[in-house]
Length: 242
Ligand SMILES: C[S@@+](CC[C@H](N)C(=O)[O-])C[C@H]1O[C@@H](n2cnc3c(N)ncnc32)[C@H](O)[C@@H]1O
Image 1 (cartoon, helix red, strand yellow):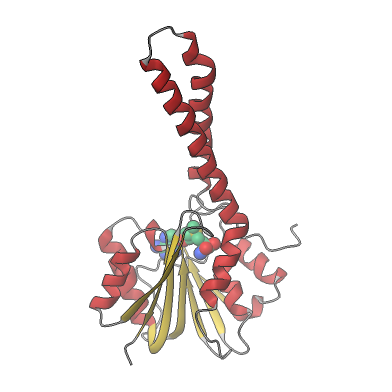
Image 2 (cartoon, rainbow, N blue to C red; image 1 turned 90 degrees about the horizontal axis):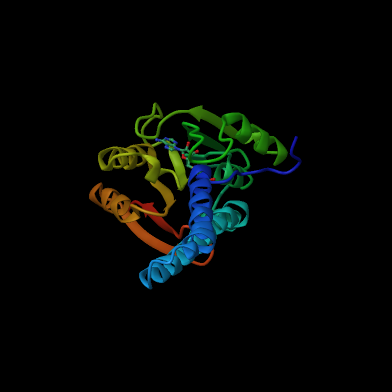
């Protein structure tokens, strides 16, 4: 059993495909194509394949680096955007193995974090509620967590229940624009009027911002972090206008 919380490798299938295709392109370009004497065009194809292969492998390595180190820093950056009193009801949407949920729980006294997820293995390696609970035990916050199997598109949470809603790299996994819009509406429904939602993703953040804006919320784009996350993550902060 691990002695330290492990928050998992994001999109393991994507990383595997990048490495496999990258290696195939590289090997073909270095060992196979040079055997053909088909004129100068093949030199261009060969060069393009070498660089594409190397590019794909570097992308895969950057994704692994983010999963192992970058996301810990990103979690701290996201949680620093909110001033915790310690009494909050917090919701982590797409909690996975508990990266944000556990980070938030450590900042609570009598508050609680609800972690909701559908535990898709293609989004995060070894993604289970047990993995989250094991991490929470290792970090000493299991009593501050409520873990729910559920889809954020439709939940049973009461209206206006959460002071803080946090979500990292979850909403883009929802297949259609309409369903992602419903997820934003659900987040808005369960957020307290004076609550805050902090949402991070690598795409569709402009659409989420528009969804919340259309619902009357103030949306602030906090930043896009191209050097410390991969793929580059954009964070938005959603709150009710003063
Ligand atoms: C890339 S993982 C990120 C996990 C965690 N937030 C982190 O940053 O380590 C995305 C998570 O979103 C979850 N997820 C995807 N679609 C969801 C949905 N409709 N409702 C709830 N969770 C969902 C996946 O099961 C997965 O745990």
